[in-house]
Length: 339
Image (cartoon, rainbow, N blue to C red; front, side, top):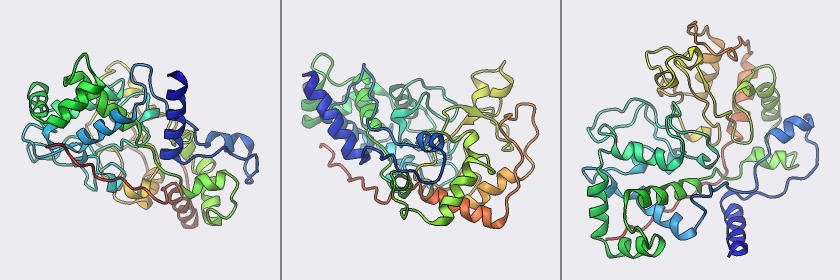
């Protein structure tokens, strides 16, 4: 059984990530920089929720099913649309009350590698993360007793929940477990940058290569955007004006938690505008300008926010590099929902 599960996980990782073993070919940067941005070979599933293809498919159906909302009119994709990098092209998406929610939707791509969830990190795992929007009155306004009852009216849902969770059937716990399993399968696809790291010197343009040098050097982006997913999974006040305390609401006595938000991944970034936790920055060029502009000089400002000065050519090269982080193909098929 253990061997079969291991094989399943390996095949699954290859299917969704498309990774291959990296060659030792140098691409002109230091070995440490190259190693920092290598893709992993496996998706990390926790011990309490090992990968099961059937559970992932069940979770996918739930992710697209409006029965998880109080009015049966919105679903998880309302805020996490696959066509927009699992975000939505709005500053703040509309929730159940047809009014904008508090913050811009963060992507769920590559969330299997997350350490905490939401912009402020208030959820410790994906199961807890999935619960939040479903039950929040301003988001999906759902109630798990009603949701469980509605799902139990479907013969197909009943069959799969009983097969996969024979001791519990349809419950809040099993719904969240299925959703979290599916979300862990949402991995950004193979991008030109990855092929370049793998040794294909023609995979990205010379401008993008210069942009990478700027990214890890002069532009200081790599102060926070580290690793293959381009995030340190930490919280920083980057000087965006506003009253939202972010992580500070959870750590009121921590100065540097005030106005601090989790560093987002940069994968598939070109699909995910507008940017920042409040969706206040519409383009990548304006994102770069925001790091050159005088910051909101609060006491909580992250010490990693160092002044930078870039030329117009630098900015164009940096954008060319950021665009190389978008997967060449990302296709998510809509599931057929049970009646």
